[in-house]
Length: 231
Ligand SMILES: [Zn+2]
Ligand SMILES: [Zn+2]
Image (cartoon, rainbow, N blue to C red; front, side, top):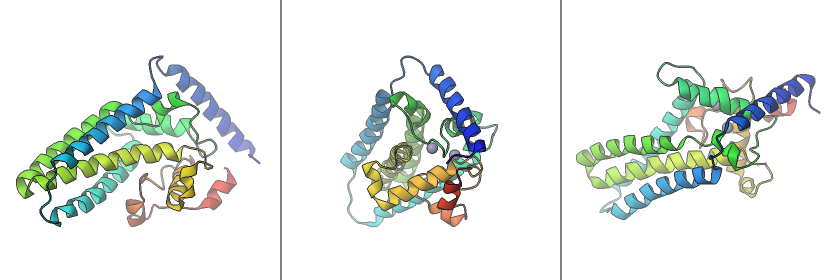
């Protein structure tokens, strides 16, 4: 049973969803958005795999380092820029706390159709910006440690970005979806729904892809009791 306070919250969420949907341009197409993100990401990864020449296993340590650094950046960007208004990136805060968290709450975390993907996926230019920045880092690494390290850095960071987009997209699917037969994915989805509870969103579960920095910094929560309160 949904309590009166939650009912008010759900009404507010519905009103926000209605306003947001009315504001989406007529030319926006969620499938086009998703396909472009995947095409750019997979194209870059494919290019790196094609160019990669490994003569020993040592450069593979780059993959481990890139995954850990990407997880830390995901955590800090989400917590410090997505949940706090800053002068550097006020738009990020607006899109995340002001739109994504108002459009989806723990009471209703599901997108309705492909036009709702506008509030789930990052804008298209971000994958270009992330790939360009990591391309510059990769170029520096290749000068220092050889081309294999550079290609591995670029493909791993772009893969981490794509996994963020795909994973977050899935966390807003119904829990009956086949992907949640996999226990890790089911738990990550529950973590994200807890993060969407308005009283928890500034406190726990800032990792979306895998919860390394949440574990390290003590902000991991898998408290399903809180979800049962529906408060
Ligand atoms: Zn979300
Ligand atoms: Zn958030």
